[in-house]
Length: 484
Image (cartoon, rainbow, N blue to C red; front, side, top):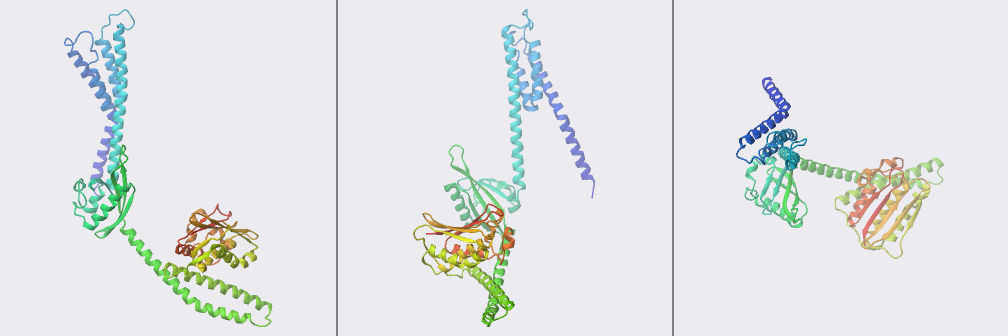
């Protein structure tokens, strides 16, 4: 590598550093020079001005120039010299007092001093504010030039008021080509112009942000359009657009969707292939259960086989149900049914597990029928899953409360337990397939499909389910909402 450019850069850096060190001193020197010019100009005017008055005539502009261009310190130095010069050289000293000045001259000198001090402070603040504004403008310009996103601003005629430097990297055209022109005038395809104009018109009309996604060339872009309001009328005066290249993101999204479909197909195939051997196992266990007077060890083994076969069958059924629902292959057998009967049936199906864990299931229902248009079997499946989960994650001897309420346009059913609880960051994730909350690790069994199935079945019924918990060990509540 040639060291010459580095040496030259170091020289330039050293020179700049030395200049910054001497710049304040030069400011003071310059302010003294301005004062000297003002002093000489005032002497030149002697004889042209009345003997009484105008002692500060040429010093005002000198002090203001020093304060504005060189800062507060040089301005105050110039002001102090100006006050001294006016007092010594241009105001008569013919009074028998300490200052030698007449009362009017003393007041004028004091007023002159105060005005110069105020001018120095005001001009210094003005200089500082303009410097800060210039620095912020420079920072903003640098930020927009280096940002990978394209920033644009449009007026009500869809003309570009501003375009960031990223447009040059994207199109090869300078920003000056865009200012004052619409997308149509810039040669954008008609269908794309219509898409942009529709989104811009929506923002101007509704005063709300809008988003659009479009393809241009071989790339895909996402744009967010934000209204900018007039401070006086509060009307939308312009629209700010932020456009980002999302080609890589979209490619990854397509890859994830393809992997997701492949996973669903694989799981559906596995579930289907497992059904036949499970049916054989179940039939074999049924035959073994009919053996006359089997030994106790054989009885215990057959009971364990029955429990495991039933568990496996339920898991396979849940897996197939979830895949069918996600593939939109499930048709609901809807009818007007009483939600109370559905909740009572779901509780009855959970009775055996509740007795085994000594958990009391408290069903609290309002007066009157709760009529919903739904598939009875599917809703029983939903609430049976929720009640079973609540029992499973409850401590032995706990209580599970099922509370049904009626609202103006919906019914709400809350299933509350006093068990393991859920971590806050998993309250949404627990409804995804194969996700289980680690807080209840000891009580877990299965693949984590139950809540995913609950969410999908309720979606088919235009309902929702949400989870809440005060934290680990403080129980959880699952709330189902169904339209009336």
